[in-house]
Amino acid sequence: MSAIDFKIEKRASRSAARAGTLTTPHGVIRTPAFAPVGTKANVKGILPSALKELGADVVLANTYHLYLQPGENIVQAAGGLGTFMGWDGPTMTDSGGFQVFSLGAAFGKTISKFVKEDAPDDEAVTVYDENVASQHGQLAVIDDEGVSFTSHYDGSLHRFTPERSVEIQHALGADIFFAFDECTSPTEPYEYQKEAMERTHRWAERSLKAHRQNIPANKKQAIFGIAQGGQFDDLRRLSAKTIAEMGFDGFGLGGSFSKKYGDDSLESALAMLRELPDTLPVHGLGVGEPGDILASIAAGVDLFDCVAPTRIGRHGSIYTKRGIVHLRGEKFRDDFSPLDPETIIQGTEPFTRAYVAHLVRSGEMLGSVICSMHNVGFILRLVAGAHQAILDGRFDDYRADFVRDYYHG
Image 1: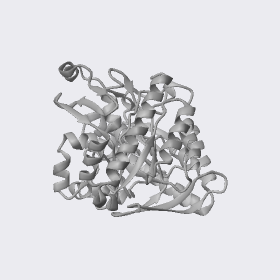
Image 2 (image 1 turned 45 degrees about the vertical axis):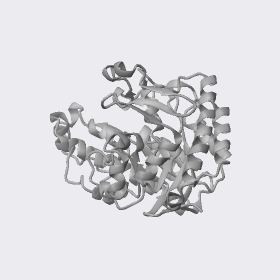
Image 3 (image 1 turned 60 degrees about the horizontal axis):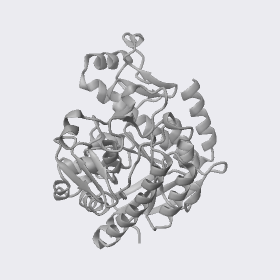
């Protein structure tokens, strides 16, 4: 008996897109849905009450970071993740695998979950700290049982196993959480990707067993399995088929999807969906580019999360229907038009581009807050529009119109 109930209300006629509801112990998520990322139990710059007003149904937090600060026992003592952060809706936690990966397998490289060839440097993540690295050598060591790693805060040594990741996530108390996996660098060769995939499968079985044995947690929390396989189609399909047969409550598209590291990208990951039961809820981990969200919806993905809306917002860039606008540009100094005249987001209505550009250039915190609120609201509105378009039988037109204007407008 799963702690969640996923119902598909309507399917698109010309694609695999579907609109549905995902009922959790803390409320209903209307799918397709975007989960703003609250890494440390906060979405940067946005109050939980504002998230609700922006249209968020669910928030995702990070197991690795909450384990290190403040510790899962404190979150549990507060009443769980939602209560701790003042959010009364559904919550999710990832397994911490990507963060462990980024401190070890990607040692000294600039890697991102999904970054375009022409993306600015601040959209990638440089995962190397010489001071911390010198304390224990390599920042993470992966073996068949788990991962030993050093904290990027103080260099202290820690260890995650599938069972420990599940134990931490039980304490955090999210409605949905993910099995522990090894998220490899996209630059790794085929043989290592295969080895890591097989290890991920063994860890998935152990994660699932640890969860099912905890009867109280099993009644109120759902567990999603993650498929891996790197940049190789055959491995991704095999991984999806293997994970789908284990009996998870849902499925996560794993891996890095960067076109910088191969010809495949999101399309290869979406091919994994052919190996899944089409009634299983699917989460696109780290998928946040607007066009990629719509492409994923068309393929049958139901949930998404990504740090991009707040990350680019902190640097003074905003989404608009005509593409990204970088407010640091000189032309916005005296642009007294609305922040985005085509997409008015609640809470940002009074502000002009000139005012927000001034805040961003001056290093004022409010500038980052306004941009982040706008961006999160923009993506939430995009997926809500997709949900309604599927119900109305016009999703393909909705997607085509958005892509035309956003990338060519």
